Every structure is written in structure tokens, then in C-alpha cells.
Length: 402
Image (cartoon, rainbow, N blue to C red):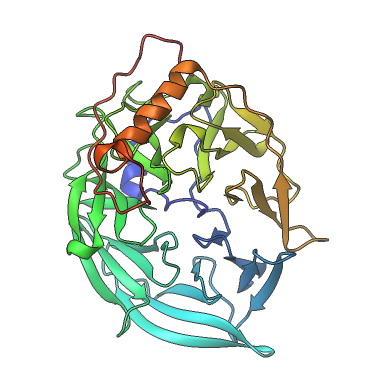
């Protein structure tokens, strides 16, 4: 339910020449609002001009409400925030160009309490970014990206302040959780000037790295979103049209190929997924996906299911914090917004009815469920599945792209 993954590194931006829409650069994956994995809390920088402060939103009550968490000194524009499941907000601040400090903020009466956690050095050309909220709601991780190596840090939830938990060769970006426990993490990695390939990092095995996406040898294959319940993966790759990224989908642990639906391509707009419907156990083709559509005239919302052959398009509520939102298990899309009259709002959007799935999509759903089930094909409770590389995708399947 998190809003989006971390933006790409500067090196990636210099190399990647293809965009999903002509003349429209994809929006960065920062949204201004970050939502916990369980959808209960969110956090953002609020304020005007230089008077910035952390603000926590509560989303799981009868009505959403915001709690300001100001300190004696305003926050810098580059301050990073991450909400935790207990309502505290992690703050990451860059100090002196190389030192990153971490604190937990929480309301205490009329004031703001602050618990200092420690610091991580990111010298020279290295930079540090917070990863999306962990599914366990307790731990928080940061990625320190260097010229040749990326280091993963546990910055909240540990026993003795920030601690290094993994070192991954290559320059990494992204950050998508693959399970509900916070064990398996996907990162987009580039090594020695080669293509970007998503890899899986096992935090319970010392940061062991295994391949996750390998569509073609030379393609840039990034993971944008993953739903642990169904195994649905949302992918951006230039495999179908080298030099031009396209959106595709696959299934974690499945032998089915990655597909690149034509309906997710817009000539003059960039399309970025930001939320997947949870609770669709072993049914990836029926998961609803929310997409941010950015064009010269503004941003709006798209909705789509892998089983459908078209993308619905909806007007966003006024003041939408573009790219932020979540699905309920029942299929209601909730979009946070802030206006002068409603500084903390949550709009429930009724998605347009989807067309009936094609027979081929129904058959694919059954095949996906069988491949992700336990021994003998019996579907059991969701468990941590060790990611395996998706089968190299045929870029056309002999049918009109859906």
C-alpha cells in the first residue's frame, strides 16, 4: 500500500534515454506523502516556504486527521520522512553534506517529542535514501549508494541505533518489499555500466542477492510494485522496444512470461503504478492497480486489472497528493488530498466497472494460482517464497496486446 518506490539515481537518469511517453518525462517516485504498509498512518513535510515541519496523518479512523510535529528549528526541504505502524515518524536529515541523522518524532501533549537514533556517514559521492515502509511496520531501512557498492542500513527498530545489514555490489535504486514479513527486498541494480536488473535481497541470509528480473540480456528491467498476497509484479522495461520503457506485469515465482499491455501506453502521458489491491490471494489477474498519469495538462488517475483489456481514467480530487493512495481489500481506491479548506482529506474513488476477463486471462489466472500453490497444487496460506527469475518473456504472444 505504500505510495511508490525510491527515485532512480543520477547515473540511471544519465543513461536511460527512453521514456514511456513522447515529450513527457516520468514523474519522480516521490509523492509528498508516504503511507505505512498497513494503510493506518502517513507522513509528509508540511508548511510554507522555509517554515517546514513533519506532519502525521491518521487514515484508519472514522475521518482522517493530521497532527503537526514541529520542532524548534524548521526542517530542510530535503528532509525524508517515514511513518511507522505505532504512529511515530522517522526523520532522516542530511548534515554537513555527508552525515545523515535519524530521529523518531511523536506527539507529546502540545509539544513534539524527539528520540535521536544515531547517524550514518555517506562520504564523497555517496547518497542515502529511505526505503519504503517495511511490511512489519516496526523496522525502517535506508540505502546508501556509492560508486560501486550499495549498503543497506537498519535505521529504526534495531537494538543499538543504525546498523549495517547488507552490502550489495553495484549501484542500486528502487526498493520494493516482496513479502509481508520484511525479509525479502527487491532492488534495481546496475553493475559496471551494464543494464539495470532487479534483484532480490534476503535480509535473513546476510543480504544474499539472487536475480529477480532478466527479460532480455541487454534490457533495463525494473520492479515498480509487488503484491505479496497475489504475487503480482509491476515492471518497467525497455525489452519490447529498446530505448523506450514500457509497463509490464508478471507473477512472482511463476513460469508465465512478462506481458506488456498496449492499453498501458499513452502517446503523450507518462503512466506510473502506485498502488495494488491487497487480499487477492493467488489471483494476480484480478488485482486492481492504481496508476498516476502525468501529462502537460496535469495529473490524473488510471485504474486497471491484468485480466482487463483497457485502462480506466478518472479525475483526481482537488489537491490530490499525486502518486499517493491505497486500495482497500474490497476494491475501493482511497486518495489523500490537501486543500486550503480541507488540509487533510481522503477521497474514496469508485473505479469504473471493468469488462469481463477474456477467457485466455481466466486460464492464465488458474495457471498462476497453480504455480504459486503448495505441494500438489493446493493453495495454502501465503508464505515467504524465494523469488526466482521470471521466464524470459516473448515480446508478443500472437494476440493483440491487452
